[in-house]
Image (cartoon, rainbow, N blue to C red; front, side):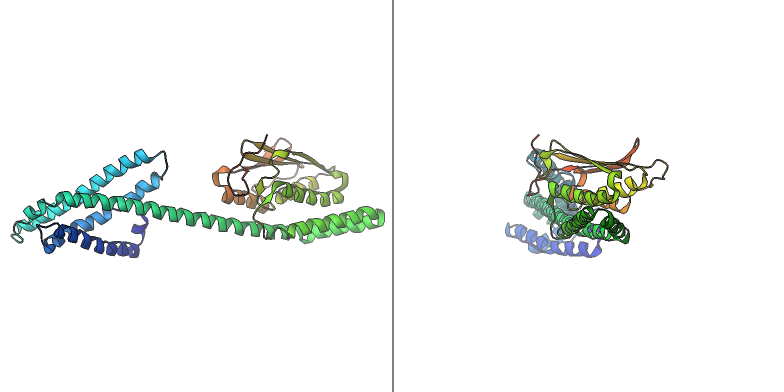
Length: 361
């Protein structure tokens, strides 16, 4: 449905805007001679009311046929046929009105006086219809721009929420308690490792706090942050936690939303390695194909433990951020494959200006 038809107030304002157009048509016909302004007003008022609704039809054409260099021929044919048909509606409405008035015996000879102006009225109808088409394209462009701004604002909001959620996860009592408990235990057994864990924990928290004002960071920085988190957990779990990286150097400069990987590796530790007595490995793979980046995070899990039926908050948040930023160009897949739980992200590699770029093979 046309947006103007969804609101009676908008429709009323639209019809009021046709009053100056009606006055213009009356003036043009009167100025061309052979008809009084009263005759022109009486004939054109009903037909212009009908034609006002006919001029809403370009919205459906503009919605299905966006502007483009390869569409000019089809657009010309479509608008040519539509403007001709609608202008015939305007001319036919004026002629029927004149005939009906003439049959009442009033304004004798009105049909004859109108006959010489039908071609002019037809031309004005074509121009008004094409003008309506241009205005509809402009309105759709403004709407698209507003939608892009809304999505950008939503992406910024989600990025901030992701940081806050990540910080909540990092600073929750379990994480800090386990880290501090490990540091306390190491302090009496291996002072060097205890100091190392303190330094790594501080570096990780400092890096996380530094992402608040950035909408994108290079993939290499995001990988470094994920490694920092895993290093903290590796000190706590020891040999139970093993990390395998397969990272292609070609796509490390691709910009990504900050804290995109941290929920994935945190989920792999929390629901994977932590639940296996003998521990397990987390595989982090990054590859590039064409203009797209593919990131895979895999972890083993205890098959006797019940798996979650749906994505957790962290994984759902990552998927939503990909949808908002990249739309249909991105994909998110998560599930069990054999004895591993695998999450795969795919999204375009953009340049610093936001355009698509192809990383070197």
